[in-house]
View 1 (cartoon, rainbow, N blue to C red):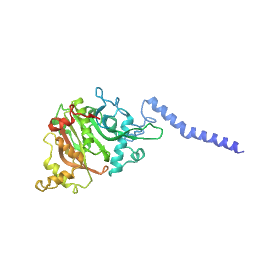
View 2: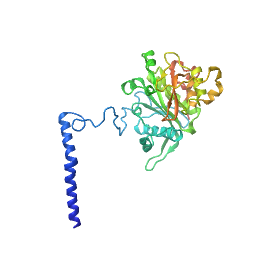
View 3: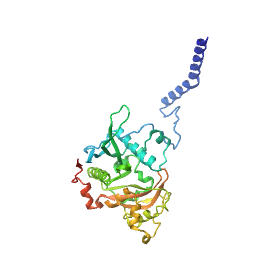
View 4: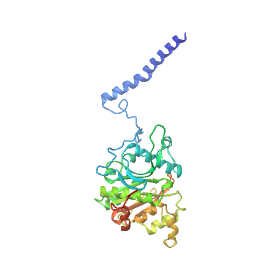
Length: 339
């Protein structure tokens, strides 16, 4: 009795599925194919203006840069190198999640929480610089232990940006006047930089810059640009460092991008005479202090990024402006292969 009931219920369910679901979908697909149109029945399934959901990153191939050794330098157990596999990019994304979302105050999306990775569309078209500690390993079940990724930078060349989404920085700053004022120059955007807390040392920063400079020389880059961040979203609490950058490190005409009108936050919150130089330098994050040391300057206006819990500033560094005393540290003559 039970068996007969089960067979009858199963047959009824299958008939209902074919009549009410499978059949109509099949007919819509056939109609769409005959008309040569996307979607079902000639109608797109994506509403106008909506962004399609992406279930996988579509990386440009190859990830490696032709003619450039992925390994760009080494100090002791630390190596700086370019990611050459999708798995290495994912490790950089996991590091970014750990620093931005777990250590700092960034607000993750649901997808980021599930994947434990910081991901956006730019990852698929950028090169990714990694700092790897060969003396520290990451072990996972059923996997061979591998050296730990402890630092990363994301690199976007202008020719790649022009073929895809433009520069990430353009979402916060009007960089069109900078591009127009420097025709023919090759620009490189730096972004998504982070280093694990125990590794935030002069040695790691120098190694990252050595890798960036090797990349710059290979691609004949003329200038670096991007956004650098101060932690916090209250400009009044950041009045001292913002005012210092405005009065003492403002970019020259032709390089000074201005924050977009809807996002502009005034940086000159204190008079020039009121800025305590020593205290202002101490208030700056290490990354921005590093930019200042090598000769970088900063744009007009800051931008509050509430998702990441930061206040961003535009930074630009023409390669010709890099202080000569640092070229010995970062240039090809520098000894970065010491054991």
